[in-house]
Length: 269
Image: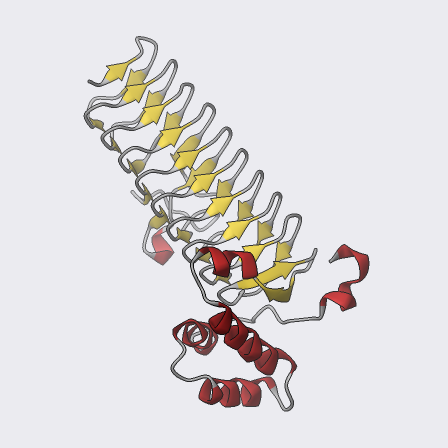
């Protein structure tokens, strides 16, 4: 049964699914869809053309669907799509897209957005992504599945974060991060692989060893970076996870976050 607190304001035209709970002082606009089984704790603002997937839970003081913070926005009916089974905590903001990049900001299924997370206009966030407190995504950021962000990470606009990567807390990401990498630092560099994440997804010891070899050959081998990529891609052909890394590198249109040895970062690593 759907339960709507008497202090909530649900506009005519909003679509509310079955078994939805809408708590005190929520404000829901006329072009909002709230999926079945969602729990809106209270004091939440859902505006614009926004869709919330089934069973998503939203904590107080969240604002989703507001206009993009972009001087290029021209007032169009751009959208926000939040997936199913997400957990969105206090003070999270997710802005609608702009007309210049498909008009959609998207967060996938089973994402955990901890307090203070900001997902800017036109971002595309995959499934199973974890945002620790106060993570900031600039506009047009693309985040792959199962990425983990530590607290207070800031990501520059137009950056891609490959699937399975982990960004250490307090890092500033200014360039694309390859899949399964571990990135760290105020101006982030790669400092290795997300070994814990790979093990959690069931990667065997032998596969992990091969991924490490490919990583070392690509970032620390002889020759130019393009030559190292070409050689490593041939040497490790047929390994799906390694192939994912090279596909990501090949499709890059902007700079890549490059690797350093942990020792080069001193005590900070």
